[in-house]
Length: 339
Image 1 (cartoon, rainbow, N blue to C red):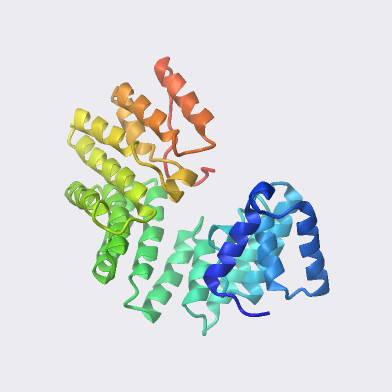
Image 2: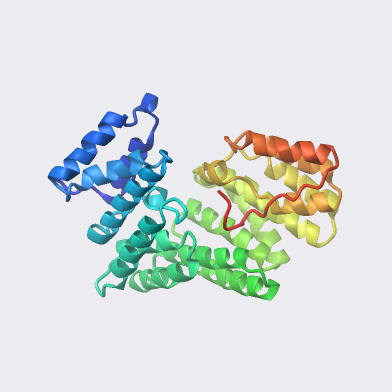
């Protein structure tokens, strides 16, 4: 079999995960692929397609099978990156998750592990173990010191640790470290759209660090660059996160009206792959709700229903409770157990 480029493997998994009516695989197709593996367990193409096939099939048996294929790929083909399709949650398949995790740890521990292997291992571990992913990204950065993306990846592990930190000083410490990495990534950025993405991350890290001047200045630059840079999937992210950062900076100075206006503007984003999947920021909305800014929060939640598909009922539940004056604790945007 001709070796497929790494990016093509992720595309194959994506196409295999599509609904049948959109060209995805049927149950018969899945059974045929499993049959191919009985004949040849090294059939990588079949395994990748099965990873996609089982991705949106949520029975325990399907989770177990997907985890089995992911563990095999991590052990035998760690050079293959599947993005989000390459992750299996521990609660979905505990034994399979652990087997896959061990395989990635072993692959990364090899002295000759290249940046692709390090990236793939760190991507799996980084979902819930950012402290294990960070040193792998640092190894990749040492191998490719002029590749700014590694600095961005390091920063994202630090930002996640900041988000999950209960102690305020620990949160600020991780966030400040993320800011430092992103400043380096910004210097190394070779394209305007890459720099835009780095600055979006920088606004979030600056908010967590409570560096309000940096958050405001960076967010304002993001909004300007967003209209002049090459338009990519970051367009919607820029509108959302820049306005959230500006709102947080305004709230820190007790400028409630300005903070509310920025929240409403954040909700006007057209969405993005990330926002559509993981949802909008809830932290600023929750903080403003606690300060009595109900109208802005209601408008924001209504607007978010345009792009956060599949969560309309949740958003409506929040809106109904707010309208009734009932206590509504919007969960933190970065709760580690969010689905």
